[in-house]
Length: 269
Image 1 (cartoon, rainbow, N blue to C red):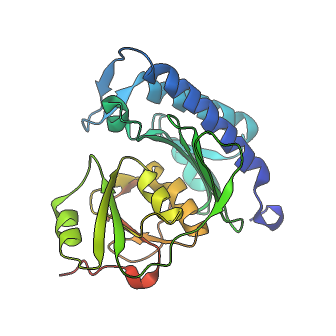
Image 2 (image 1 turned 45 degrees about the horizontal axis):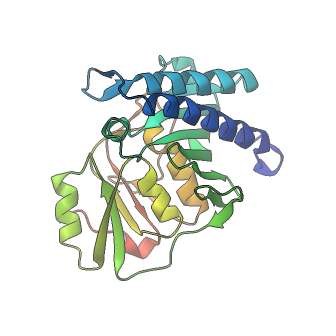
């Protein structure tokens, strides 16, 4: 990378600011008595909050880093991104179903990838003001609700009495069978959006398997944060690291996240 020691300080600062500004836009809609909900071709919901947050983030990052490509959920896909080493990957409102349900479990996800690998991740939780972030080689950090100081976070070292996380709105029968048939898993937590990966990054869960398809912007920021916290995230089918800024932005093979290699589950049975 052509960054001094890979520190990415300017990019990290810009992503944190953009995420905070997007969170403000989201909350302005969330706090209304009512808001319109449209639906995309795949029946996923879309709100004014998604659009406003997307615009804020894209404009901010384009202005500061005009040579970087951008892949954002609510923007048209400019395929020239495939020719660039650096690409911002943005989900302006991850967990729109949770937003519509008003349960607070939605996030703003901003990642930066270099040659298809995530090197920076920022996740904001608009309702609580919580912040997760990481940059390659700098570890992962978390700022709790109503606090100003960030603290370093790391995955747990548990190999027994494991805690799993699953989606509140996108669980699959394959996943339920896997969790029910794994004796070492003694607790299952439900969360929306990228909060599932964040729980593992801060040591409050150990297992996260996803069989259903996701998009690059759903997981890129989480991927960086998990890795910098000491965790493992891989393609469920191949066992390889996830790649980003691809021609096809759908993660069709699923993925898994574990705190330690020995906690990877056997999904072939």
